Image 1 (tube, rainbow, N blue to C red):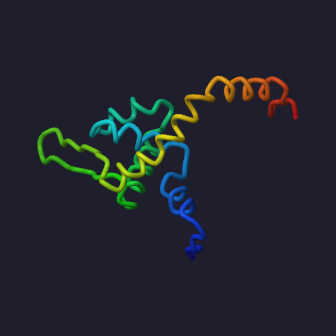
Image 2 (image 1 turned 45 degrees about the vertical axis):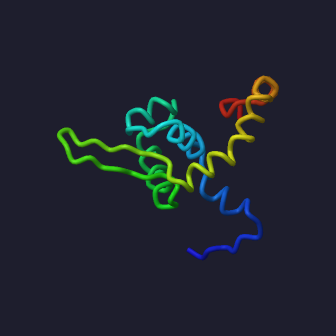
Length: 122
């Protein structure tokens, strides 16, 4: 796959957190190191497959550190790296914006869903 050169800092940032769940996973991990099951509970709706995939991608990008404890049963803990912590800090204003506009965005989406025909009507 050919890498398209970035023209601004948003490109690499969006690449690293692209996908529905990555920013939410980073948010949870930045709070405190988490085990797999804790992350699954912290991000409702994520499938096990997507959790595994996103954790691998975040680890490959240097955002998340995966530590394996060799004990019975095996224990794996995920934590934010320094790079991940700095990205999480950069996401804080975005989270604040979402909190400030949550009601408005939800109402607009509900209105849109109410007037949009569903796939079953086509």
